[in-house]
Length: 463
Image 1 (cartoon, one colour):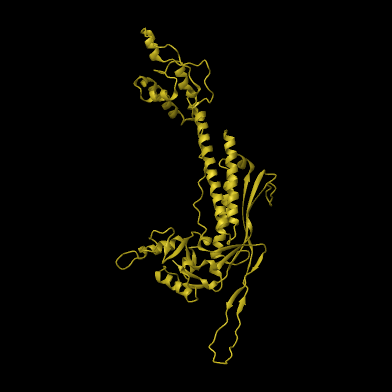
Image 2 (cartoon, rainbow, N blue to C red; image 1 turned 180 degrees about the vertical axis):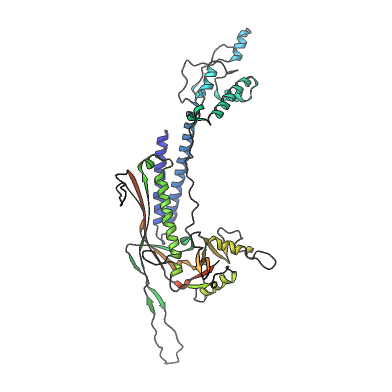
């Protein structure tokens, strides 16, 4: 199979990975487990196939580079190409009766054999010559009769290495190699949905979510007495769908000639940019149109301020926050989570008792062997996106810590994530058509709402 065919197979496999990933992302929150498992299984199979294609392509390209560098022929030996066994010649000179047949040099032996070595063997320069390539290689590195050949080949290799550093001495003939992978950025992590924020779909730009804000009351009533009826109180908080976008321009030459394919790199990077911007907005969005309003700026969320100018977070602060949720009947701890900047967890890990022992080293603490770090039994998710430059009084390096029942927050997606590509894009200074460019545009329409603000506690002024 040719390298071009392998590249086409990799492109097709990568396309199937993206299609499978889109199916997973489009699953509604309440999708059946069997459907979710099937989608994830399809994505895993597609990724496995893409990795296999990538490995095959890398192997084929490496083999091609080796053939080009050492002038290796893929063609079988011709019928007239022979090699003579020198031991046989000696026996014949001594009058021996050994079979004087000369074996033909087979195509199997020649495949993968450098032409310079092959010529030596054909011209009887290889001492103790053999018609089998594997046997020849073994003799070449171990047999004492090949000492001169080893020296000659080593000298030739040494000259090539010494010369390739100078362009005029042959370095121009040594091509550079670029690894066919790209090292991605060490990005911040999107954590809101991991913490439990719900994701649902909508097909409009304004969504109302009716809620019960006060219930009826009961009373003790004497015999024949009448109960005083009470009414429930309802509200309908709403969210508006906003639009997140990101874009990149690229020359058609780069798109067509790049390896790895720059189009796939751009797609993944724009998708990550959209996801991270949404994640930050869920926590710290200002609510000033068109930005969504995040948890920190939602009315009704309980807060703790650690002082006029901020202070270091303590275990007592966390316990006070947990009590604030308990006081409004948010008691299902297994549904809680905590989100903070990595600096916060680093500070908690360093808290010691009076004897110098780390407080959180016990079971359930941050040093316990859990899949994700936890504090006081609550999973903690880290995001380096969260601001550590909030101003509180004279303090300018403060941050927030968020914890609560994140399933009481909801993100409404209007349509799937889309990536549009065009060569007809234009702005005030440039035209994709006349500049022979491709313009990439990523888009996601989304709204966000905290349905039960009292299910969250935000600790502010954390140094």
